Length: 630
Picture: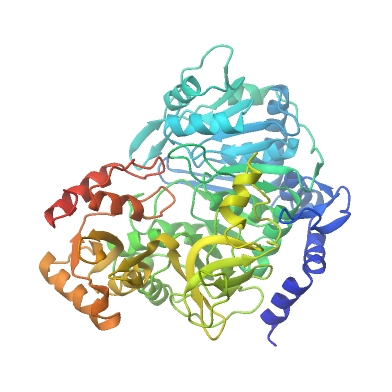
């Protein structure tokens, strides 16, 4: 047995022993009574009886151990031409004083607070200050539509809202205050106070008695210490949906979250205290919670908080500049970011301008990493490019190539093997285990490891219905996939990405994999569209690389031939639509479901998470040209 196999088997056969050992890495105010509490199955809890504080473990602990002068946060904002660094000591000062502000505003242990902010250090400071007091924060992506914010206000019922005056989306100024005012006006629940961080790019008018200036409150605030909380007390709520009806509020607890994230930094990402780690995401998403704010700080690393884009701020060399300038050892972002870079700079000319000698690994997640993007990044960077897979619900990776345990050979298209703690099983529709290379439904045998969602916010029944009742004894991921003969996991996409062509179930993910290997394609999506004869047929939407001169008809014929040769005529892939860009959420997920509705002329609502609503109109126009979206 290899090292990974030993570690993995121990985590599955003796979870209490395994995670009890991992928990020694953080500081406890009171040791737990039980590592794994299974007294209320299927609601498992970790470290019951234990008491600790997440903020103490992320900030104070490092100052107390003599590492206060180490940089904790590097704020890099090409949109405002700002680079600002905070040592752990400086971060402690800011967080403890802002916790004092919140305390004076009536925030105590268990109080909910909504944070609606751009990618600025104050967002992380606000999160940590809530954790310091034992308050429950809910970060809502900055610039979210007022209606979506109102839904979350009604569900979380915050006493205090924290926001900033605005943000720059590329070159466009987005004012947050009018959005906040409109949301509060619409919401039935009314927050008592709003704390506004005024940015130099725009000043927000304040409503007397309700709105307060961040800097003015900080000037007179007294620092406060950490409030011990139960390991099972909630740290935060993160909403995963809510375009219609009630959103799902994923709950994260304090103890299991701190233990799992701290463990993941060295064991999955191969980083140690003092290393510079960069997750190029946003604090509004789970990646931002886990790997911009909490995990790097819990592990004593330096984290990069980047306010910019992979391209256009100012160019396709933005990521390489950050890695080179700040000595980034490990980076984590979404494949869609790399596809954007690949489109703008297909030959990697910008990479040659920067010193990336200290850069060790690139981790990608959020969208399936197509083999073409993997090969492109791997060839140009000459560093391991590692696909890994997880969800908002799990809070940290389910499958990965664990670089701190044992590095496996990379298989393009696979996110490698289950991370210790996750007993991944592929089941067929009858709940029976699938054999090697048999595609089925990806599930995780209970109990889930620490750090994953214990339930949904004030919705235990919905938690059971959504995740645990589909296959009793298992967590249902809603993804399809398979495991090969070497134990490598292949995630083929959401279960609804499987289309039925004349009675044959085919994976659009598999087709995307083929389309993405075409030399002229920068990015693609394959969706199933309605067909009178066959039920559904695949339709490809492609963004071409810069400088391609071939006609759309040539591209269409070449792709149809490639699918026929790789998957077979059974796939019935005949139509390709060339578009300028694909519609995505701000976290980089392609809106396949929305495009499917547009193509089939069904009514649709532009999701609140969309990066740019204009793209949907462009998609509709392009689809009309090829006979869809009538």
